[in-house]
Amino acid sequence: MPIPDIYSAGIASGWKVLDAATFTAPRTLEADVVIIGTGAGGGIAAEILSQAGLTVLMIEEGGLHTSDSFKDMDEARAYRELYQEAAARATSDGAISILQGRSVGGSTTVNWSSSFRTPPQTLAHWASEHAVTGHSVEDMAPWFAQIEARLNMAPWAMDPNPNNAVLQRGCQALGWEWHAIPRNVKGCWNSGYCGLGCPVNAKQSMLVSTIPAALAHGATLVHRLRVRTLDHDGKSVRGLTADAIGADGYTPSGIAVTVRARHVVVAGGAINSPALLQRSRVPDPHKQVGVRTFIHPVNLSIAEMPEKIDPYYGAPQSVASDHFQWRDGAAGPMGYKLEVPPMFPGISAGVFNAIGNDLRQEMAALPHTNAMLALLRDGFVPESPGGRVRITDDGSPVLDYDVSDYLWDGVRRAYLSMAEAQFAAGARRVRPAHLDSTHYSSWAEARESIGQLPLKKFRALLFTAHLMGGCAMSDDPARGVVNSAGRHHHLNNLSVLDGSVFPTSIGANPQLSVFALTAQNASTLKKTITA
Image 1 (tube, rainbow, N blue to C red):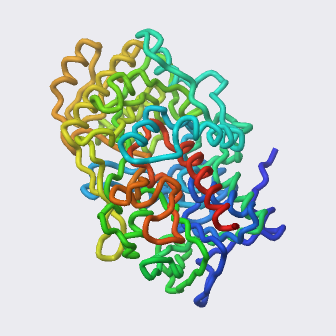
Image 2: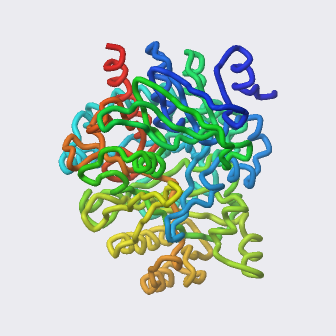
Image 3: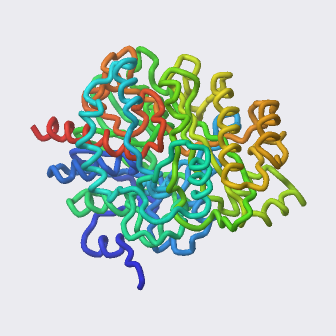
């Protein structure tokens, strides 16, 4: 049965959706609230504020791409249209690849649907170490429950696909903790193409849930519009200056757009939000904007399994293990969460770090390949300060992120844990995603060899899909950009409602943390604006 395109019907019914690529003359737009970014933070905020009767303007730098364009399930198209810098975004030195969304719905349009509550240990750490209030486990419980109901989040009830089953089987054999991952899906076809845009609108991303709800309540969406600066007098934001982007999705068209609003919500994510504040020269007396940006560094282990894995089919992530996450507490050696990634041909070719005949052999073995990943939990000790967002001469954002000995220790232990789990699950051979590694045929060989691997940038493959921090919340203005409610410490009509406000990384896939914290803070903001 054909899947109807939500936006075609909505626009026909009167939704206000504008493509800035079609603008032919300068425009001025006005609203009660303007929201910059339509990902996890912006999408939730838009629904809550528009339902309160406020006029809401949503601005998205990326384009509007819907299920109609996802039906080809094509990797190249998805990376080009739906990811920052066509999936080529990386840290400033190029050592860590960054997968981050860039379209209406942001990263929620392309993530793998994993939906975890913020770990209690993280919330407690924020309160004790970063002067954060109002976000305890008890405070957050109703907001988590509200979002879980709104976005149909529940532990994956079907059998895991073979890729995830390797992690489950390895944990069971070793006596490690494991659990089914909650996913925000409704009517999922279990195809596995979540990262390329859901072609059947099953994933309850902002694209198909809160943004349509906001539009139905009279909000306006303008896509392909890049906000250049927040214009302010040091006390209040007076307006925004923005540039229309052409049909290619990247090149400015030369058309300027001015926006005026009573309140401004920045929700561009943990690289773009601090960069916008820096371009705008917002008051920052304690030099907090852009610092302590966290990424959940990820390393990988590749295994050849005797059984067919087909790691590109089925729910991408349905099994996880926290066995190594909190065993040494929040402030001990770096903890990590074990999961698996889907392995599509395009991204796999990069992961394999091979060329010529070696690459052909690796790709030929892809149907029998399992990949395991470790989400390394950065930001909880002084030896893990995260990175720093800065802007280049043209205002573009870059992330400087060094890898400390503390982090490298976590990388090595994670390599060992993943190899042990893969061999326990029956792997024929295992190879860490590292340029100096070979295939190991036994756990004993892997344990010895991984202990000797030189851990250096560009030798160990590192990437991330989770961006956090850079506009940290703290009730102490000397330690944060915004307070615990997301309100800017120095501009009275500016809020930041996205993952950039996290004082550390989460220690789990962060989308539910962004959803719930934004729902809580946007609900407080709603009362303030409408009072």
